Length: 236
Image 1 (cartoon, rainbow, N blue to C red):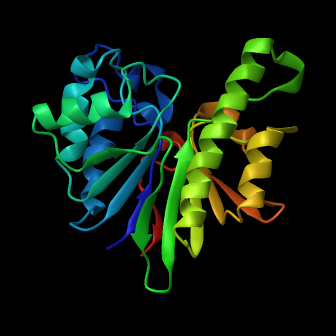
Image 2: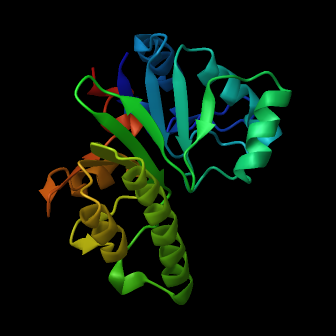
Image 3: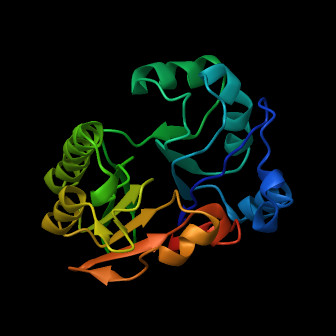
């Protein structure tokens, strides 16, 4: 049994939007994913912090769900900015059940658990919101406030369940270059989050990624092209 994270798969089985056109690390990315996802074994958990599929509806994303579900283990999905197929959790769960897709669940206003040998590990998360103080708008403020509420709901569920360790999975980076999304970072710190895994950043933007400890929280970038499309092992 092992716990992994890998963000930004950008699958496009039913949509003609392959990431190979960006060249570089993305060239042949589907072959890399097919090869690297074989690390998953029954009983493992893979968390995908956003941007699973380019589909703009559940129907368009169906074959991408099936691709992910074809590998063993439990998959937990967090919403990303390109996941336009995302709907209410109840509708998504019904859709997967109706189409025979198993092993995929949604990390949204809730938390899941992973039984590590030493303690009960909580898996929390939400999409988050990109933060650049000098480019923000009233809409950005509203979306950030909403995401803070969702994050706190997830973290509070972990606390109430007596989690011994908390991992948080977000699509947007709470810390990027000189910017800090204070509401998100404060919640992570308040609940004693061990590590925050995030995605969204690609290519040159990865150079400004914060990959260190800030106020007790470790931040790790796990977008596909930043980790060579290899699921990152969190707990063995």
